[in-house]
Amino acid sequence: MTYERPIFKEKYDNFIAGEWISPTDGNYFENTSPIDNKSMGMIAQSNRKDIELAVEAGWQAFESWGKTSTTERSAVLSKIADVMEANLEKLAVIESWDNGKAVRETLNADLPLAIDHFRYFASVIRAESGSITDLDSNTVSMEVHEPLGVVAQIIPWNFPLLMMAWKVAPAIAAGNAVVLKPAEQTPVSVMEWAELIKDVVPAGVINIVNGFGPEAGKPLATHPNIRKVGFTGETTTGRLIMQYAAENIIPVTLELGGKSPNVFFESVMDKDDAFLDKTIEGLVLFAFNQGEVCTCPSRALIQESIYDKFMEKCLKRIEAIKLGDPMETDTMMGAQASKDQFEKILHYIDIGKQEGAELLIGGDKFENPAHPDGFYVKPTVFKGHNKMRIFQEEIFGPVLSVATFKDEDEALEIANDTLYGLGAGVWSRDVHQLHKMSRGIEAGRIWANCYHLYPSHASFGGYKKSGIGRETHMMMLNNYRHTKNILQSFDKNALGFF
Amino acid sequence: MAYNRVAVTDKAKDLIDRLRKKHGELIFHQSGGCCDGSAPMCFAKGDMLLGSRDIKIGEIHGCPYYMAEDQFEYTKNTHTTIDITEGRGSSFSLEIPLGFRFMAISRLFTGEEAQDLLPIEYPE
Image 1 (cartoon, rainbow over the protein chains, first blue to last red):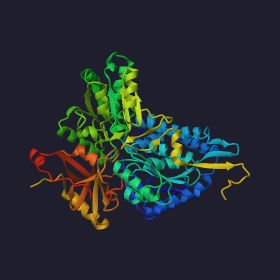
Image 2: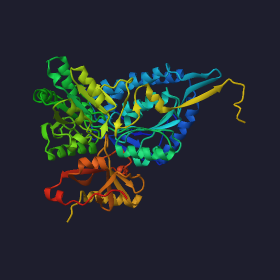
Image 3: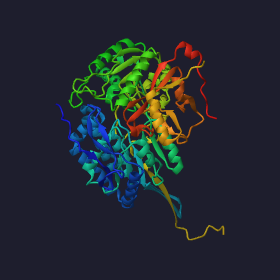
Image 4: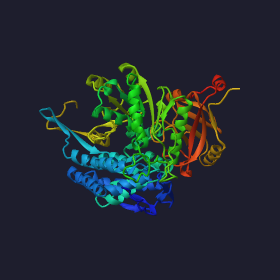
């Protein structure tokens, strides 16, 4: 089945206080699709003044939203999920045009996961409590939760709607109002989403401002009236976000990527069964979302005793990856998200070749007959060693770097020899080995005998330079609220000091 | 003569001149991590707080070029040329509103260069 190119609006204004508001200075920028490098309409090029309006709208909405019952908030989140579900196909197709990814993924992963995220937070806030302690016969200590206020959220371009859901759902579930800035490469799907949910969310609870980082992102991150910043992106901007947060003394949550190891032990080849098949897919998942995933399993570490046979099977599976029109439901890989990203990936492929890594497959752009002007890269695999740049720097493309190891100790050493620690995969039929590796790898998410699963009720976040804080799971709620202690005395008598 | 670790193309120089006219003195800091990671970020001098482990690997067109020390460990054998491409990064880098993105293009140092490189500088 092939989906049609959707009809986009001529221009997209900001979504502030429940209304479509033109950017104050009247400027717009052109949004092109990486699928065909053609225009998808004009997007508000906002600045400090627009950020002011959005933050103000957030505080106005917060006055009542921050005090609503969890019953009401839960109902709003559920309605958002329902509206998204009723429009799943529409949103999936738009998401695909915005980002370039194959519609097969947006239909089956991005949208269902985003919808579930709203349902999950709608559910958990109903079943949560604070705590109460009798400190002595006359003193009761109550720990209650209160929202922070207006929070800033700056989201990336690799999963525009899902990353919006990961950030917005817990923030508003906790009673905050948000000012969201989508990435400038993928600004449109979130605006189409806003159009759909406009009538089910109280005005001003969700405000969305588009624009460029230095013009709109920075004024948002430095605004004195925001109470938290959530950011997903790279390390230099992550540091700036922390620096700006230091000026206002507010907390941050940062998710800054990784160079995730995917470790394959020899026992996976003990049988030719369904599990071996799953394991092979586990390696090939580096190509999921064209490799533009913070947890992309971009370093495959394979036990040397099985390397030849295992790799042969994997390469066959990689050869079978179907590139083509992202709008066809059997296309497995779509376009890279932007021209500069496309060039960066090709450049890293060149670095890999220069460093002497052995190219096993791919290694070039893909001339897509369906869309000759889009940005497509063939799934690429290099064999090399862990000190090479292609093993240490996040390429954010469909490029896998493979190395071998002798034993568990060496596997662990290579796995942890990285600046990052976001995700990791471990594959083995030996549960003791699985556990030892899972505990030994310094990363926030270990996939043991699986990869790229993102359930709402499982925490996600980084060790080392991969960031600070966690996303998903109900623990996320505490990243978006204060704990207030109310110490209630029932004693009539003075302390006796004065 | 000692060799530079970092160079700049004429197109990138023109863009630096345009930005300097608007924002004053500039610095570059090479990023790491996801999304726009590994890209050079251009900021007004003083905007980014440089730390004791940000090393200056060279200068391009009058702008110091920095990188985190641990990242440099992996790139120290490669020469970097700063170029530009049309595109739209998402970060706070100053060139983004102009529709361009600075890019870092690398090649391995030749044997001769590797023997005689200008020293890196740690912040004072």
